[in-house]
Image (cartoon, rainbow, N blue to C red):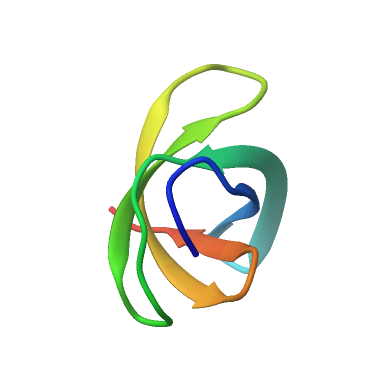
Length: 59
């Protein structure tokens, strides 16, 4: 994954999963941490690369 890639941003809390589109602001392989801009809110979120095109929001 590289900066500018479109990603699925996944957030999990208490058994609930929410997905949103976003844009990677950094790059890396599976397990790497990076910043992602949420496509709908515009907020920048810390995330971890889970798979190609998918990141998990981290606290």
